[in-house]
Structure formats: structure tokens, C-alpha cells
Length: 315
Length: 283
Image (tube, rainbow over all chains, first blue to last red; front, side, top):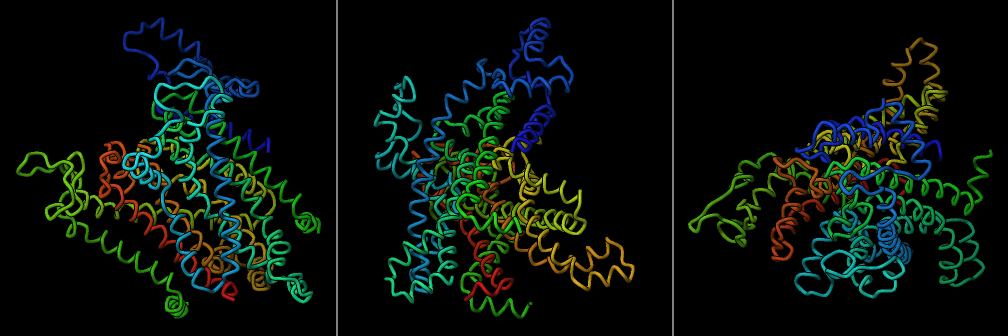
């Protein structure tokens, strides 16, 4: 995991360093003197060689220092930590909804194999998976915010309202009022994967010998489905959930932009479009770190949940 | 195989729907010049001056944008970009995944190790953020999506193809090919390659939907080219021109429906295709 993280960090560093144009163009006003320019170049360490810059970048990153934002002149790390809770809450909230819904409906669709329910259910699920998240978000906004005026049009609070800290935010009902629309839209997009996964797992598990055995024992179909089949079918879904966390963070970029949700994704979009390289680099690195950690966690979880995996690899 | 294909299409209404949707969009893209009444980027005028924010009607089938551009014509031309991005991305993913899988599986050893480590690293790069950064790096162009997809999606197809190659290379006919003095190159591309081609097609067809969705997202975020009409560009235009608060549903609903149709058609075809490849799924 650390190897992958290091490699990704290296790629990110060189990718941003090789970008065309001077990274300071956004920062320097036209009235700056040569002296001021040199001072800035020195301040951001741009006068050193590429290799020195790289070493500096790695050692700083290890110490949790991601540099200064060009546009805000504030530490990137602080800015990331400030918006991180928003992203985590949005992601987790919608993943919870999506996976609860997906698991239940997926199991149900497997049970209704080869009936009209499946005939309608599967295309509907596939359609929700093909709809761009931001498009669903736009429809939701036009309908529920602008036309019906039930939900706010974006952000995390009413204009002018400021949360003092994360706890204050979490206790304020208006935060949840703002959270509902984006997280539901995200959930609509995310539920397809657990649903289809759960369904195909259930179909597979239902054919196994131990299910046949329980049928012969005379257990009710409810007991078989819930106690025996669903428990086994859930294993891959648990792994998918872990992978889903890492993936959703990267994909949140669009949802956060549509709903003006101040999270990591929106910050990345802002940073890239305003050529704020340290900010873009830091956010990207953070998103990558979450993804890599979650991939790693999924591997471990799989070994832990399903002992057959380790057994297979040993042979 | 071709006969099989027709049988599956006959039996599988989903796959048939998918194929029909693609045919429809291909025809629209080819004859876009004839179908679209206006130049999608031209600013139109009518008797009342600038023809902006006009509701759908006889003159403008889906109305006009806030800049006075014909929405229906944009929709028609958007199919070109979607097909172009989707198909090139599919080709790129199939090509890269296949070559990597073949080399990695056939040669094994340190080369295989190296490639698989690269796959691990690639899987650690967040997809959409990478496309955004790449778009900033290379400048706005439809190619960014194709490049990003072929850089980031090869591990999925590559790994599956590799494991297939691992079992194929142990077969007797490969051994006899080696004994008869075939070069590695020839064995890989003449003897093993054709056997894994169906898998490459499968992963390629999955990539079509991905590419179209990604292209739309990138255009929506404002990192797409501004002189090429795409459905994502239309949605971005609508979003930033307050179409939502104006309730201009006719502006932003149709492009989304086109994207959904195109991507869902890909899913349907994949499902049908999987049944040709792995018939046991049918039960």
C-alpha cells in the first residue's frame, strides 16, 4: 500500500511540475517588480532543481505539510481538513442509503428471478446507472428547489449563516436540510452496483449444496433466504462498499459542483480551473490516498470475511 | 458466431433494443447535416431580434438557448461527439488491455511482475480527478477522455485477459507451435490473440458507456472544448445560464435522455454479448 501511495505521489508531483506555463502566473500581478517576483519564486521553492523540489515535496508531505495555496495564501492541509468533513458526511450518508436499498432490493430481485418484477427491475436499475449524476442533480434542483421550493439550491447553510465548528454543523437541522437532496441524488447513482452484485450473488449462493440441504431439512424459505443465503451473498457487497467509499470520493466531484457543496471534489475543480497547483496537488493526493487506503482495506476485509480466499491462495 | 449473434438478438429483447438504439444514433450522427435545421453554434435572430430563451414550438423544435442557439440542432450534432468519444475509447481500452494482458500473461517473470505493479498503481489513481487534471494539462479536447480512459482502465481488462493467457499458454497447441519454431511474437498474436479477442470486445464495449459519461462530466465541469457541441457541453451551458431556475426543462432534459439511452444501450449489448461468451449464465 505504501509503495502504491509513494508511486502515485511521485506521478502527481511530476504531472503538476510538467504542466505548461509558470505556476506563478495566477499569483503574480502585472505590477509586480522583478524583486517581488524573485522573492515569490524563492518562497515557493521554485528556484531549486526539479529533484530538490521533489525531495522537499516528499519530506513535506510526510510531515503533513502540503504547501501554500497560491490563491488563498493559506496552508493547503488546513483547507483540506476544513472541507473534508463535508465530503465524508455526504459520501457516507449516500452510501448508507444506496447500500441498504441495494442489498434489500437486490435480494428481492434474485428471489423474483424470471418474473415480470425482474423484467422491469433490471432495466430500471441499468438506466439509473447510465444517468449522469449531475444531470439527475439538475433535474432534482429544478424540480425540488426552484419549482417546488422544498429544498435549498446548494451549499451547506442558508446565505449568511456560518457554522462555528463541525460539531455545531452536525447539530444544526438546516445542515441536514441541505444534505438531503445531494445525498439522495448520489444514492440513486450509487445503488445500482450493490443491487446488481447482491442479486447475482444471491442467485449463485441459492444453487449451492448447503441451500439444497436446508431445503431438505424443511426450513422455511424465509429462513433460508435471510439466514443462510443472504449472509453469504453479503460478503462481496461488503468489499464493494469499502471500494465504493474510495471511488465515491473521486466521483463526488460532479455532485459537489452541481449542489455547490463545499467538499474536496469541488475544491479540486476550483483549484484546477484557477491554476492553484499546490491546492490541486494536495487535494488530488488526498483523494488518491483515500482510494488506495480503501482498496487496501477491501483486500484485508475480504480475507477476514471469507476464509476460503486465504485457503485458495495457500494452495 | 454471426449466426449465434442473430439468435441471441432474437431471443434477447434487451440486446436488440441496445443495437437498435446504437443504429439510430449512428444514423443521426451520419445525417446530422440533413436533420439539424440550424448550425448548432450559430446565434439566431427572428423578427423580435435575438432569438433567445424561446420555448419549443414550430420554428425551434426544442426552443433556443439563452444565447439564441437552436437546442434541437445541438442535440443532433451532440450524437457525433458521443459516438466519436465512445468508440475511440472502446478501441483504445480493448487495444491496450489486450496487448498488456497478452505480454504479461505470456512472458510472465519480471515483466509480468512489473506490469502487475503498474496495474496496482493505476488502480490507486482517482479516475475523474485525473481526467480533470489531464484536461488542464493538455488543454480542452475530446481526446483527454480517450487518453485518460486508456491510461486508467486497462488494469481491469488486462488482468482478466492475462489470466486467460496464463491458461492458454499451457495448452498443447502452443507447445507444438513453439517446437515448430514459431517466434514469440507469432505465437502471441496468431495463436493466442484470436482466442482472447471476445474478451477484448467485451471490455471495449463496457468502455463506451464509461467514456460517454466521463466526457459529459468533464464538459459539465467546464474542462471540455467550447467549440465542439456535446451533450455534456449543452448541460453545462444550461446549468450556468440559469436554465434550472427558469424551469427550461426542454433545454436540459433531452441531452440527459440521449446520454442515458446511449449508455444503457451499451449495458444491454454487453449483457447479450456476455451470454454469447459465457452461455452458462443463462440457466
